[in-house]
Image (cartoon, rainbow over all chains, first blue to last red; front, side, top):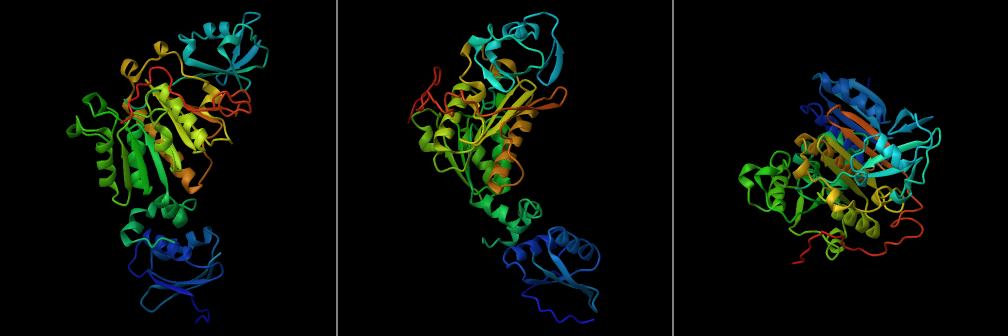
Length: 80
Length: 70
Length: 268
């Protein structure tokens, strides 16, 4: 399934473990306007299990989450 | 008569207990090192003898604590 | 917004992760100015934690030199520092923990003549002094300069602390009025103090400074927190701004800073 939504800001967090992936996600959000979309690439395992959950807890909205061919995940989040 | 002293309920056995007497009953060694608060209001030391406790009063002894540096 | 370096992101990651601090809170910390009065038992842990937290500018005031009897509780000073100025000893440790921090040292004894000039411009004051005249002077100066501060005191196994937001919450004089007579006062030197009690109290004071700067949580205002480390019983005593306060009440009698007896003061 391909999504048509375009990210305003993109961060490739491949190889970035917990919790620095969440730290970098928060820094990216801090520079964005409300309603803008952040695209992330997250590793499989703890990163994909933890980062979206924390992002939801802070009130942001996960628009899509899909696993790529190399096993990493592409996640689109709308800033609250 | 029941009052609260430092957050704990205390039964006063004597009638007409003023703040000076309460400090004695509580064995406060140096009253100069305590500020007294009665029902949330500061009471000046000179008024201890004339301040008599009533049932339900809430008394706090605030200890002067000065250490910190040397 | 500050552009954090990769190292800063790692260094402050545990703050940035906190919802109540976050990126914005860490930026505020890096731009904040806090001054610590006394580089002793309370000032040591406060100085180390504030430096570690990345408080951008930290002032530290003390006229003493490090003595061997300090080392049981004044954890910013090491055995090799004996004889060194406490402010220099503390500053070296703060810089070693975090080179982001600018430390300003004041090797002076605070008194009515110099306190305004030293405290002015700081966002928060930590009172880690060892004597009542200076504690009252810090309170009065903070009220006049409108600077929030944390009062702290320790004795034997006990500690007490309260945070004052001048004009809004109870000040130290609201509850304690004036210094006790000097002959009634047991000093740490005479009475002793459990070293870790200084750490507990100074660390609470540091947390209050960090909360004030970041806006996280609720400050320890209108409340005297006391504890007894023998039982680890903590108690919160409700305080309120007193109409009868000679300093911050509606009819103040203290309208200027003055040294109380026994405050030795030499202005360099």
